[in-house]
Length: 88
Image 1 (cartoon, rainbow, N blue to C red):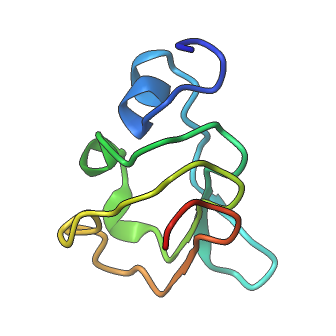
Image 2 (cartoon, one colour):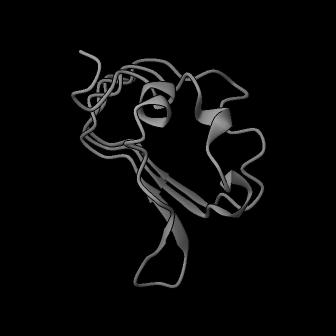
C-alpha cells in the first residue's frame, strides 16, 4: 500500500518519507530503513548522499531478493543489516 511505509525505496523517496542519514553511536553515517514494509530495493540508487553511508539498516522488511549491483555507489558502505527479511 503506497503511503503506508512504501513498498520500495523509490516509494519512500517519492512520498518524502525517506529518513535522513544520521550519525550513530559509533560515529558512522547510517540510514535506517527498518520496518518500512519494503518488498524490494527499487530506487535505492536514488538515495541522496548514498556515497557517504557506512551502515544501512534494512531489518524487519519483506525483502526477498537483492540484485548484485544494488549497492553500487555506496562507496563507504561497511555494514548492512538484513535480519528479519525474506531472503533465503
